[in-house]
Every structure is written in structure tokens, then in C-alpha cells.
Length: 491
Image (tube, rainbow, N blue to C red; front, side, top):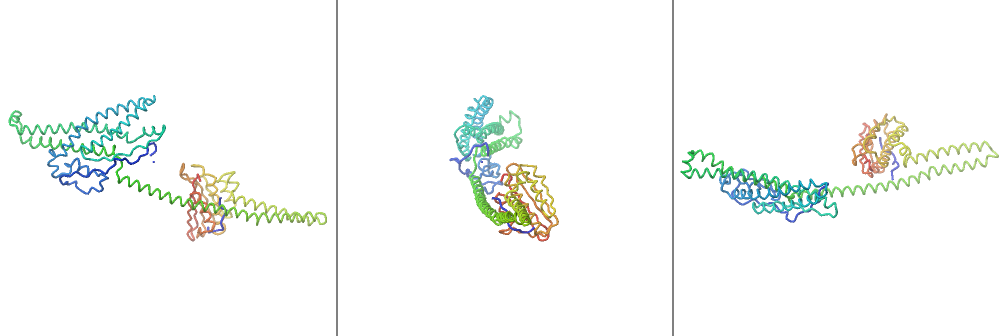
């Protein structure tokens, strides 16, 4: 198909509270000063991202090897780790008992409404526990865990409901249970191994103990003493490292790098929205211009077509009235001419109305309207509209756009394409709010169609873009033409 004159143109996570940056959000602690790291040493990148290697060097330097590994049983990191494990064991088990008991009571009474205040109080206590735990880690380990954002309070029932759905408060409840389990198991294992190592050392040093137990000092020195002392140190540091990473995941907020990344993503979305707004303004302007052009076309067609024929009809009827008495044959000829003029006027008015909005589209739907277009086309046209019965129903404006696309395309096929046959396919793709009405018109003609400015195809493109649709024309010379248009069903 090729161009033809312009055709008629139609006139943030749901359920969770919002967050704002917390005042105590800070970059993660710098690596502790001390001996140079061994095999695990490497660039740490940005400090606020808190890589695992930074935490290893801070609380578990024995895993880095080297001198820190050799001095693990007597290093300050081991004693800090063991001390914090003992404190955390009693502290977290107490908090976990209170929180889990309160949650169980609150959930059991939630249907009686009494459980809601209990849950709200428990979640407030969980948030306080998170603050206290971050402060404890900072004091005992020198590790800064960035605080999550504060919950934005909203008035009314919705505000209380959002507090119940505070994900960070529930994460603090989970943290208390996991930390209690981890610290108690690690404390028992670390203290037990250290005790075995100390007993082995005493028995090696005190001859009376060695003689009483009749032990092999070298066996104890090679096996029991290293396993006890270094094993206890490794367990203490590993458990502390795991607890710190757990706290960052469940009690911490977004790091500064993540916040900057989110800000960049928001800026990109804003730029995309601005581009879309500009495009919508352009398409809406084009739609207004098309509607104005349509109004002028209707005025011109009425003035130059139907109005002139009605004037001619009045003249012929006047001639017939004057000739009816003196010349009946002339009166009959005038009436025949008037009758022909009436039929011509009716045909022009039907074409005019069809150009504004075809009645068959309103009365029988898009399937019948497309079949009617195919029936009027001098080129054989195969219509496949079975896909219109699936998915969301298309709006009247979307169906009108599809109708005029097919009408213009078939007009071009008949006038310019030199095609032997054509095909029209209409269906609905997608579902829900994203459902789109797709129309595809193809022919086997000479191709070479272009949607140049001011052409009929350009008018169709502007009509489709005004509905936020897509217009795709593929027409290589000598290989036929395929026109594919998609418009939102809710347009």
C-alpha cells in the first residue's frame, strides 16, 4: 500500500510503611587498626557498603591468617568476641523470651481485638531492642550498623495498621530469636573448648597433675591444647562475625551507597516520566489539531457536497412544479433528476457519517465493522477477528482507531498497492490494565508505502499516538506491506 489523502481523524511496597532516612545513619566502621591482614586482604571498596572482608578484619581477624591466626587465643579480637557473646547470650535470650511470648499472646487474642494493642506494644519494644542492640555492637565491637529509616506516622486507623506491618520491627523479633540461639550455642562451645585447652595447659605445666592422670604430654600438646585454645578462638570470632552480619541484615538500614543508587533510580524514573509527559502533550496537541481539521472537513464536505446537491434538488423541484400544468413530460424529467439527486445526497451523507463514526461499529461491534470494510473493498480481503473475544474488551475510542486504520489501509491497497489479496487480523493481547487491541493489515502488493507528513498514513499515526498506541509500518519495495497498530484497550 502507498499513501493516500488524509482520512477522517477522530476528534512504594504495598502494605508496608514509608521510610525516611534515620538521623543515626552513618557509614560503616573503618577496619580496626592492627596487624596487616593475610590471605583475605584486599581492597574494601567504599566504606559505607560494608563488605564482608571489612567485618572479617574487624571482628574475626584469625580468618585472615598470618599473625592474627597465630595469636588468635590471646588476641584482643577473641576476648572482645567472647565477651560480647556472653553478654548477648543473656541479653538476647531475655528479649527473645519476652517478644516471642508477647507475639504468641497477641496473635492468639487478635480476633478479640485485645491482641492488637499487645502486638503494637511488642513491636515498639522490638524497635527499641534494635536500637539497643546496634548501640551494644558499637560499644563492644566498634561496628556501626546503620539504623533503618523512621516509620512515617499517619493519622487514624491506617497509621496503626501500618505500624502493625512494620517489617523492620518484625525483623527485630526474628533477630532476637536467632541471636539468642546463635550466641548460646557459640558461647557454650567456645567456653567448653577454651576450658579444655586451659585444662590441657595446666596438666602440661603441673607435674603432679600429669603424673596423676598418666597422660602423654606430647599428645596433649599436639592435639588437645591447639584444638581447645584455637578452636575456642575460632568459634568465638566466627559466631561474632555471623552475628554482626545478621544484625546488618535484620536491624540495619540502607547504606549510603544503596540510598544513592535508589536516588539515581528515582531520577531516572522522573526523567522517563518527563519524556512521557512531553510525548503525551505532543500527541494531545496533535489530537486537538486533528479534531479541528475533521470539523473543517465536515463543514467543507457539507458545503461542497450535500448542500450543493440540495440546492440543485430545490431547483429541479421548482422546475417540475412550474412545468406540471403546461408540460407534464418536462415535469416528469425534472422529478426523475430530483430523485437521483436525493439518492446522491443520501449516499454522501452516509459516507460522511461513516467517516465520523460508522454506525455498524456501534451497533454490531468491531468484528462486523471490519467485515463490512472487507466486503466493500474491490481487493479480496480475509478477516480474522477471533482474537477479539479473548481478554479485556476494547473501549469505543480504541475500536474506532482500529476501524479507521483498517479503512485507510484497505483504501491504499485498492488504490495504490496493486495487490491481489489482503488480510486483516484483529486481536487483544495482554490482560488487565495492560491489555492492548492489536490490528494487523497486510497485502501482497508492490510495497514502498511511507507515512510522510500530511499523508493519510501520517494522520493514522497521529490518531494512534494520541491514544498512547504504537504504529509500525513495514513496506519494502516489491515485497508487500504490513501495518501493525496497537492501542490500549482502556484508551
